[in-house]
Amino acid sequence: MATAIITGGSSGIGLEFAKALASRGLKLILVAREEKKLQQVCHDLAEQYNVDVRPVVADLSDSENVETLVDLIGRAKDLAYMINNAGFAIHLMADDNSRTAHELQRGAMNVMAYNVLILSSAAASLMKRRGQGRIINIASTAAWTFQGNYSAIKRYVLTYTQGLSLSLEGTGVTATAVCPAWMHTNFHKSAGLGEPSIPEWLYVNPIKVVEQALRAADKGKPVVVPTLRWKIIIWCLAHGPLALRRQITRVYLGSGNYKRKRRSQAK
Ligand SMILES: NC(=O)c1ccc[n+]([C@@H]2O[C@H](COP(=O)([O-])OP(=O)(O)OC[C@H]3O[C@@H](n4cnc5c(N)ncnc54)[C@H](OP(=O)(O)O)[C@@H]3O)[C@@H](O)[C@H]2O)c1
Image (cartoon, rainbow, N blue to C red; front, side, top):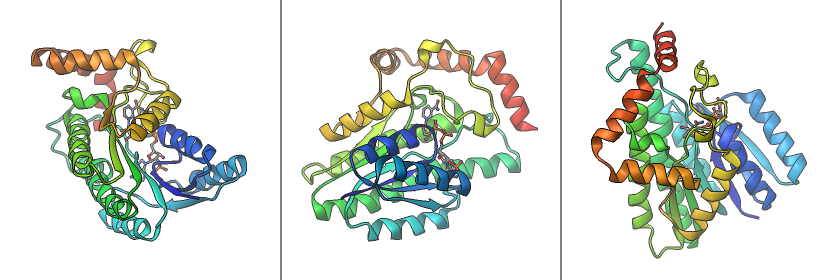
């Protein structure tokens, strides 16, 4: 049976990918930092789906750990899915010049951008030899707004993955950037933040995100924005005036709730 590697597979959207692929009978390798939680998730999935689930404890903000994963990919000869999903919220002002901010930003770029590049290319080169495989990279609808480095990183994932998808044409291997909107996961909580106070209808269900992501990957689509309502919103942002995107970001960043959180993260 084929193997799927999922970074950030212990929680939220990564855990939903793990469940969906385990239910298809795939062997899983899940990567995350928190060992106890990861072990428990692997144990539960293995029991529930009767598949082999292997934990790999690694902090992907440390670029040396990425090379360990590259070796792991090289040995996974039956790799069918590489899902670059690990990530976290950054609620810093774009011009924060503190040492803490520098470290957080470097970690964010390693986890959500550099790793995506290195692990995608490692997976692509292996999968091309087999003539099959799916690379799924988690971007965000934030790629169409201007929320500082987080938006810039997610735009990077979106652009890089589209380039990768083009270079893989005709090989049997596909690359798909998935752009979910807000979800009720541990994303905000693990950054020590509350969930944004936005209308509930703007949230998307991680199970739906995973269903649509896997379907898009099977069809070889380079980009998917899950749910119809978010496809429409993103179409308007992408084709509307730039001023609209600036204003939407301004409103979101200027909301009392968001300001309060940013102040507390800066302490
Ligand atoms: N939730 C949203 O509103 C939303 C919206 C759009 C896009 N996204 C994107 O969706 C992806 C998944 O987020 P989520 O919402 O599912 O959040 P989540 O529930 O907090 O899950 C994040 C996962 O990433 C792992 N992770 C975080 N930092 C890591 C590191 N340095 N090294 C290794 N693993 C790390 C976490 O495990 P450990 O903490 O144990 O390491 C966890 O398994 C992220 O890329 C995020 O940017 C989220």
